[in-house]
Length: 501
Image (cartoon, rainbow, N blue to C red; front, side, top):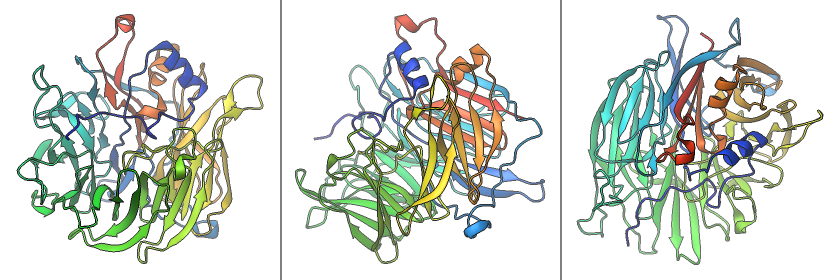
């Protein structure tokens, strides 16, 4: 039976332990359940005659950046450099749209011309410096899912409801798959699809991704794929004789799928690397028993996260990482990620939803849980890494510093971009961590003024999207709701941005 779209928290059972700052925020305002999305953006560097586009993820979960030169053959190649003055100023602040119910606004992207953000039944392009509206793409209904990847010519994919919500139809089906041209602000195409054995009823999808020119959408009714530019069908949901179906896909430089087989009480998950044009499996790896859900952290290298036997115990959706050879399907290594030590998380019911981690230099970078710092008050944490071939911890260690906590945002070549959540009397920071030396360079230091700080920390990092590039930081919500009477005088933001230029 078709169920209404229900946003859930990362890990399926709620977020990991909040930071001290987030606890203060949540104590001050009743939190709505939010889903985590991540925008993907491209950075142009150099002069007008030497522009190079680099695809990166604001969630820091893609593994396309292999690293450059440096000791041990890692690190280097980063585009982001510290400005002459790292002190930032507020770029712009956008208020939350007025809605009458919980509304999904997952999805944000940065192109060379616009910052793009999901609104209520629309996708809006803004001037990245001023925040003025450049264009709007109206949608037939509320957005359900957005790809965290873009093509090199700034195209991406979304899933949205077939109609606007009404008293008579509170939960229209999430059956519309569409492609956006973020350069021109156009919905290139949108369509629904039926299953091979499902009659005329359109298939409902929960998530969508992009790899090359293939848009792949998945859910509990199976997976389908389309040509990014034309919308031509590449494959459609089809349940095999053994009851297997494509639960969801991971995109980026490669395409992989979590395929679910067996029964509800006794599932068997299979991770497959796919030919993105035909959907044919290139390799297969069977996840161990006791794994009900799996999330694709990266497709190249192929890294999967899972909560084996529900042992994580912290709602993170992660007890182990699995590094898999995509050519042979063989397990390279399994990395235990103790929930009491590490703070990355994945939304268990979504295949491509992991956050606060990054893959590059043949390593996976994760934050530690917060712990007492050396100062009199306040907690802190670190970012550490594991080798994806041996599974062993490396010597990498970046300290957040007293009263700050930090997490990876994305790779920048062989370097790591991280966000530092601030204490109550300072602004946040963006730092670049050298992949070879793990030395930190501050790229942005946000204002500590109370009003600015309140705006920056009004977002919980467990439920927000972070995009940084070329001296600009964008923090945005993934879900908004009807204002509460107790918060009518509180400012609630859809987006807050900072800039050093």
